Length: 455
Ligand code: UD1
Ligand code: CA
Image (cartoon, rainbow, N blue to C red):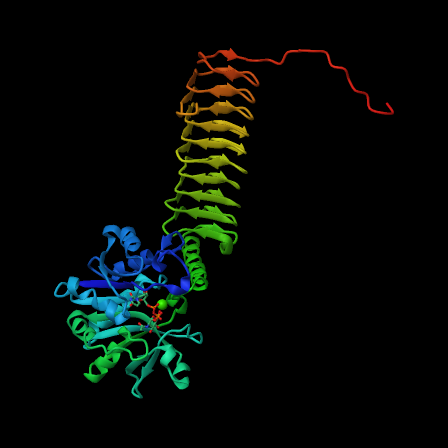
């Protein structure tokens, strides 16, 4: 049985007041449409079809080969949008799940339940409903006295009586493909807006005496649709809470989940504690037993086990085990801190490897460098790695002692056990176990001290 999803994403999203197409607005690190496509995967067997229109170029570019795109031009309503999928899907799928790309919180299990209901339904389709006191502009579900669904009425045409109905149309439907393609052509044009409403298929089925099944869903938070940026922030908060809860249930501690911002897809091992105001973003993986934050941003990075990262910013970095860093440290792309590295306050590392047990306590910049195990980098030591045109490498051996405020002018090599004096400006390679000092201050004149009044 082939099951294919059709996502409607052609609308303008006027109420977002944005130049970015609505479905590309991100929640927890991924665009809205990504979340819907992911949720549909467990319920479908084929690549989804996305109906695009407004901002089609951008949406198509983002989707790449994760979905087949069909264009709806002009946009004449949700029924007309679904119809655009017919040419690419006719006779290629048995079941079609149609949903709107602006509902990123619907879960895989919910779509599965919908498809399962339809599998047992002798009628042409099943749809998802929810009850709520807050109708949010959703269509209302009308039922016959015997409980069967008779119609969906959009809010703006509903009578005051109908507006009081608490059962709402979520916007997820599961159809027998053959019936759907035929029915879409029979949807009447809505006299008020001149559009073709997908929701009118209910009345078509009812006219043919075919049963429409409603799956009443019990989690309203899953059905948050996004029409404005207020909805977007509500949906993101709900998704964030969901992500955090899952991590906590898997053994991650959070002092305050409300101020812990973790992107979808981030992996965290057990017994790691995430302190408040911490952002874990992008392609990030964190091992076990770490303490991360407070006030930390980690993006596209890997962290081993038992590390301590306090009030720091990491991007594209790799930390092995037992690393201790911060407060106020910054790692940029290509920073690799091996086991037991200690990196204190106001340091920056970029495109460099710090060997096991390296200590870099205060105010240093290390760029394009390789540093051997157990080397000590004194306060204020800097690699001068840029000559205005090129980035140049620095290689420092093991057990090296870099004195405070040393300038390491690249390209440069320091052998194992080398030492530099405070304030040294090192421009030439240093051999193993050799001490270099440079530019000591010398007296240049005798000063006349100005005495303060009264002394
Ligand atoms: C729709 C439903 C409503 C339901 C609500 C749930 C209809 C007529 N109404 O209303 O019953 O309660 O969703 O969220 O279906 N789109 C197109 N082409 C178009 C028009 C819309 O692709 O010509 C897409 C939009 O991009 C959007 C989705 O369809 O992703 C829904 O459209 P929207 O205008 O947001 O419908 P609602 O008013 O929310
Ligand atoms: Ca909507």
